[in-house]
Image (cartoon, rainbow, N blue to C red; front, side, top):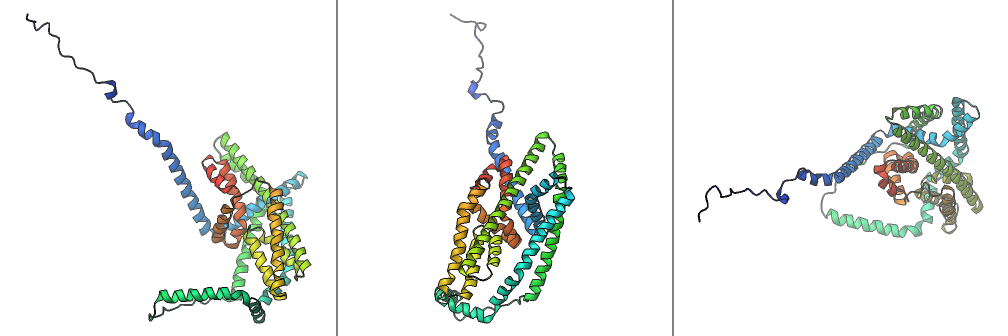
Length: 384
């Protein structure tokens, strides 16, 4: 039986399976999954570059930025006092002038009272006979150091090679003490003048600057965040600096009484020294103990001279473990590793002034990290 061609069904093209069909957006789905990670890495890279640029600028312009930073921190500490005087209907300019005059008067009085004993001890330690006496008393402790020096010389001789021509040594002559004192005094006086002028204007007109900063913020949320950040920084720094100053004053008084009790001359000088050095955690206590040990070694033998640094460190241990945690609480607790890194970094960039400002600057960085969401993890590293 023959089938006609008309009855034959034409071949039908089978459509591709749904799985084989190209899906719209399939190529863009894979990159889209990696976009959050890419954005996060980009944000961290940008933040790292910004921080490095700021640190480089702080190092290059340290002669300008250090007085500004010091004046800003002093403004945060003294602003509550000025605000209290303004509430008593004292004009802001008069209140700022009175606070600044009182601060300068305290420092001038302290320097006038302590200049004579400090200069006497300084010149006493420069006398050759005093240094020979100190070396004689420290002779039992010098044996290990001499052995170490001898070993290092032997290693240097072995590594340099025998018979080789010794390298030419170039010695740069250092400036004299008088020139060093004059240069340091000139730069210090200029810094004091700049800090005093900036501090006066910040105390008198600092609120206007904050109002303009808030006005520049584009949205209401940004304005609220700026106000909250500035208020938190001001309250935390003022509370921290004023509390630490009171703690250091009590510590200086206790150490002065302790040095007077053991018979060390000029106990007021060592009390003021302890007050200033305690602004530097860890390092300040060790430096103060070494200084009182050297002074006690001039007066007594080694056995009794060890009583002075022992009493100094004992008072510091009580203050660091009992008094400071009880008064400051955990609101400004910082990681000890972060503290040491901050002391090293700012000390290298700004010298001794940077060491004094290292902890307040670290507190400011911690508060900023707590208010900016991408920096929360970094703020947790800074916190204890």
